[in-house]
Image (cartoon, rainbow, N blue to C red):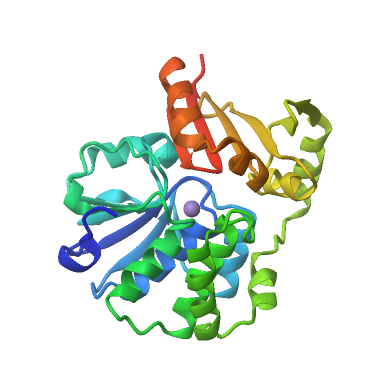
Length: 306
Ligand SMILES: [Mn+2]
């Protein structure tokens, strides 16, 4: 775990907690938790471009207010929440690069490309299953007294990013035990908060993306490929259905970007002992001049397309 600005060097002035593009439950819950612990007068949550269906549902239920594509120049400090590369900031990448205030970063991905952010302004741990787990551990160490809603936010990110404990470590269960005791919700109720309430259009898009699905038996592993999955939750669902490894290729016409996302199940990670992000995607990013992100069980590669 690197330098911990959360206690020693807190962001000053008006603070923006900025998630990655298409914010997911871990990103939105981490930002919402941080909003409750920062003492600054103005702390807002910003989301580049759009938010995914489960994160939107949580925000509605827990009354988390966020701004899509906020004006960055209104703020003195920006804390990136899980936005590990410039590409992950979508249409805000340019204005973040030009931002003159102080920049911070918190997250659990294994690779970060924001070289301009000093180490003392980063709080990252690739061993944490979710950013909320990282925040839980840090605040627990400081003997912080979690309020029920804070415990719920941290638990939600943890359940979501561990794919409902598919990628859990023994630490995840210890964290979850404590968070569940402190949360105002039961485990069932937390799962219901995470369940997607998709609109009609997204449901059709999600189901249609399964038409491109191919199944392969590769070296004793079940592998699934599909193109343009509407949401990365689909990849996790396919692991539940028996895939050991799932690859989705998404083409963002608007941003002229191609994104390859691979999710691996426990069987694949245990058998290969590979960290998808560090060992596979790092090399791919080098070969294709792209940027990579993720962690042991999730890898993503983003490249500019002509
Ligand atoms: Mn995460």
